[in-house]
Image 1 (tube, helix red, strand yellow):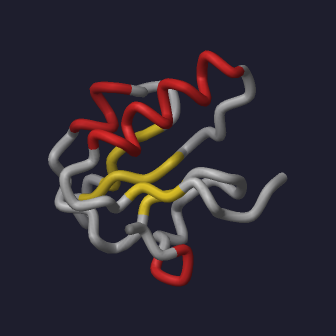
Image 2 (cartoon, rainbow, N blue to C red; image 1 turned 135 degrees about the vertical axis):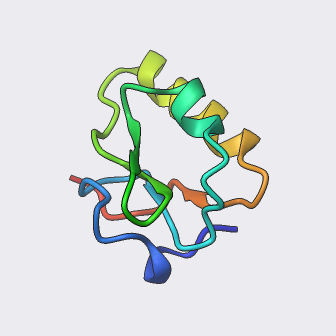
Length: 79
């Protein structure tokens, strides 16, 4: 389970985030490329844009559910 105390500082403020467990597998970036991107220097993913529509939220949830190391969280700060 992702830990918001260990989320990357790169994450856009809001509900979804990626924490330090990320293994850079690319699944979230393939599933929801409009919301997840890669920090090339450190080799991890993070949320660069928070979803606004239900369809976008569903894509982020699909990425969260598919994450092999449970590095994606949906309990970050709202707003």
